[in-house]
Every structure is written in structure tokens, then in C-alpha cells.
Amino acid sequence: AGVGGPAGAGGMPVGPGLVVDGATHRRPRPTERAVGIREVHPLTTVEEICQEVGIYGPIEQVALDKAKGNALVHFVDPAFAAQLCAERSLLQFHGQLSAVGIEKSRPMPAELANAVAAGATRNLYINLGPGGASAAERLSADALRELFGAHGTIESVRV
Image 1 (cartoon, rainbow, N blue to C red):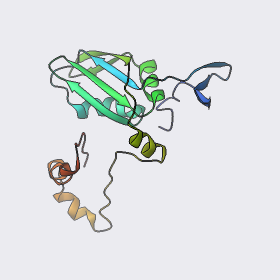
Image 2 (tube, rainbow, N blue to C red):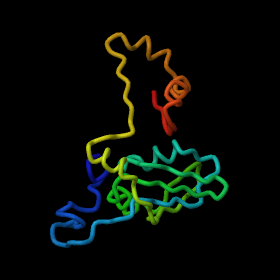
Image 3 (cartoon, rainbow, N blue to C red):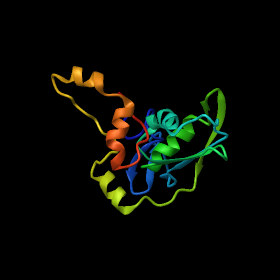
């Protein structure tokens, strides 16, 4: 999707803190990188939220409070949060509509910000090589979660 997410992230960056919108209007670059999702269906999972909003850009963290029916998604870049909210005011999970809006975000940890600036992602791709088809048959989402779960929280596994 590129730097701007699916449709261009609300303009082109032109300098620190400025974005050109339509080549004629300068406006402040968005600063909040968190998106709140309200009235989330109780069966909704973090993985489903990631699948729904992850197309807009890299996500730092998703917090889901099933008791309150709310989720908070922290994108790596504020432009991704702004693009999501510009394109969609509602998301749907399990047939229930959930409102979407920009929320106040906490600062990104310096270590993570530096890693992202250097090109880091939180994705892990496994290439099983030329003979990998037989090994791939033995790999399941559960097996990968068990294998890599010791190294940290796993939000999503796709095989």
C-alpha cells in the first residue's frame, strides 16, 4: 500500500510537520497515531482488528477491552491513523457496526521509533526453500504460535 496506506495517506509530506493536500493546501501533519474503535462485538479478536485496519499501515499495538467493548489501535505513523479515519467512520465485526475515531496517543518508545526509522517491521516471513512444500503441510497456526510464542506476544498467524 506504500507510505500512505491504501489511498495515499491524506497528502504528500513536504517537510517536518507539513503535508500538501491536493498540491495547493498546506496543513499540519497529523500527530495522533491512535484510533479508537467503539462498540466492538464481544466475539471480536485482536487478529480480526489487525486484519481490518492493518491495510492502512504498520501497527505498533492493539489493545482490546472486551468488557467495555472498545479497542485502541496505535499505528506506527499518524498518517496511517488519519487515513483510516478519513476513509472509514465505521468498521463491522460479526455483523455489528463499530465507530472509529482518532484518539490521543502515547509517545512511541524511542527504541521502537529508531527501529522503525531504520526499516524494522513486526512481520516474520518464513521461507521453507525448494523442498518446503512437505514441511509446510506440517506447519499449522497453532504450531507456529507455540514455537514463536516464547519470544513475545503473537497477534496474528497466517499459514
